[in-house]
Image 1 (tube, one colour):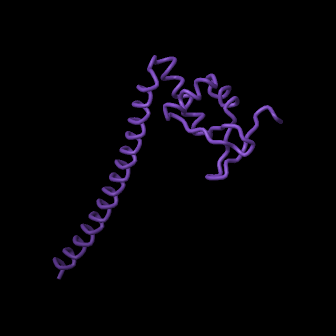
Image 2 (cartoon, one colour):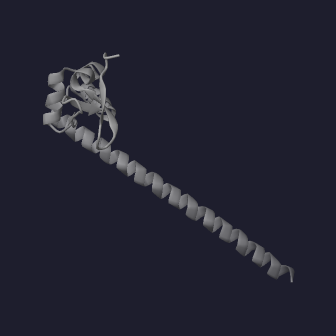
Length: 127
């Protein structure tokens, strides 16, 4: 059971993997992980047993970084740029979805108001 040692980081409580395990999961070297940490692309935390570790989100992020670095040929500065804009795009898409929902709600409210006014108009015409 010691093949993939995990530990809970106390603040916030989430599972972290040792860097050597992360290296296997993300198919990168530990040196590459520490380069990414130096560039602030990922954040390692000291786990309860004293080893550095990364959370699952950072493991996924490392996979993306590896793809951009190895397959796309980008350097770490360019990868930082790409990841920042990807985050901005996600935020903007979320805001856009919220605005669309707000517009749909307003449209439903207006449709209900139109139906009410039509009924009132029909009642006036029938008299």
